[in-house]
Image (cartoon, rainbow, N blue to C red; front, side):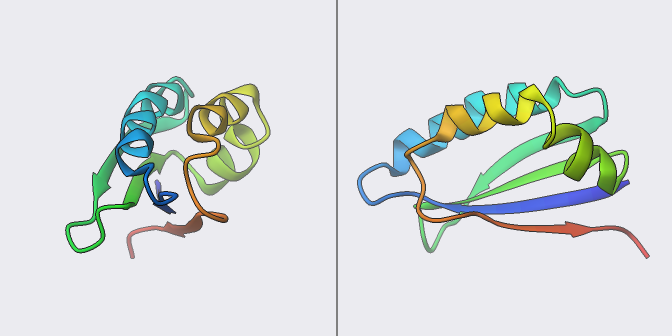
Amino acid sequence: MVTEIALFTAIPGKEEELGQAIIKGLDTIREHPDCISAHATRCIEHPGRYMVTNVWTSLEAHTVDFRGGPLFTQWRKTIEGLYEGQPDVFHYQAF
């Protein structure tokens, strides 16, 4: 299992809109057969910052299968125009 952490920062004035779009988009991520779980949290100190945490069966399930397929496009379309720059994305696994 691999845990993906993605950090998004809302465009000023779009904080609530981004949060709602992320929640809606989690359903799209969960549709992928190799997604074990997907959820989001909001930063207390910086309310425009969101952390999306997805657990995948493998790194390739996320980086190749999901990102290379139509669900990724659908997910990004949901949050398009609501966040600044590119999200920081990291992958972790238990050791």
